[in-house]
Length: 353
Image (tube, rainbow, N blue to C red; front, side, top):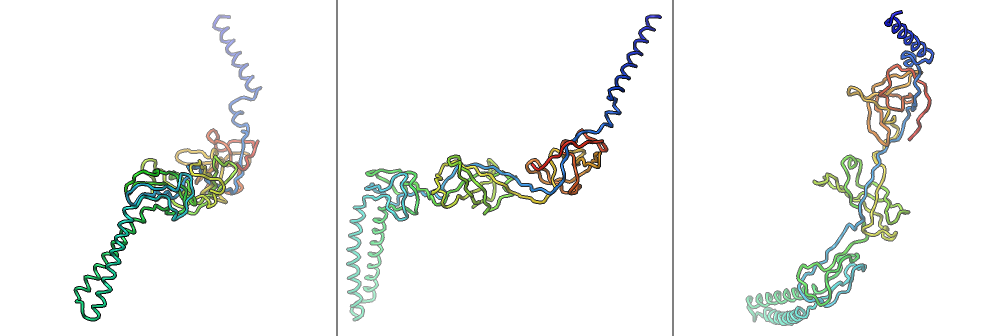
């Protein structure tokens, strides 16, 4: 046999053995195509879908008051220090008002003289001895004297700086003996009866929040406590830089008694946009092809490609608005490698997540 004849025999023999081996092992393309594909499925049933939000910010008083001087003078006495609780109307600072008090005393004396003069002219006017002009001049002089007295009494009162409301002193900017000017800031007060957390909320979450909503809050400093915060204010528009909308969460009125302090880091986590009784499937089970979303529905022992309309996605589940009925069974995993009419074998069922 020639060289080429021997090569041909060897080649034919190899091809025959290869074909026999494929048939014996059952790995032919046709057999692999008809073999049932093991899959995991999920039963379509009504579920509850919610959106989880997570926000963080620092606790701070809603009302901060900067107490300023209303007159100039030397500080005589300071009665409050940082950290002190002060009540509304309590004296915080006394200034040296000796000069103003002297002027007040003089104004009161002049007012008394004007009052006596007015009484005398009034009596003479009744007896028609004093003229109308004299009477009007005496009355005007009394009014001027009384106004001057009121002016100096007010200036003397300005020498005592009082707390405008119940609060805690957070900053003190003066010491006894210092000279202060009108409008100098002397104290900073924090109203502890209204603590808030102010955070920026993205637009995808802000649409689900409303004034009055309650959300749980935890503090890093008090990890074992959970506080119910209430949304007290939502800004009408987002901030220009961050594009986050400021939202104020109010803490309970007894938060201070529970150990909460301004500056604590607060974490607010909760559920919003709660939807109950909606049909949903695992998000990974939804495929996309040519602009359409579809699922692989189990029809006896085969898969059926079904175009569906989807809604919101929450926590790994996607709402199905149309194209699917309660009680149907669908492929629970990515349908990209599956085909319409493919033979399948169910090996597992996915439950609630």
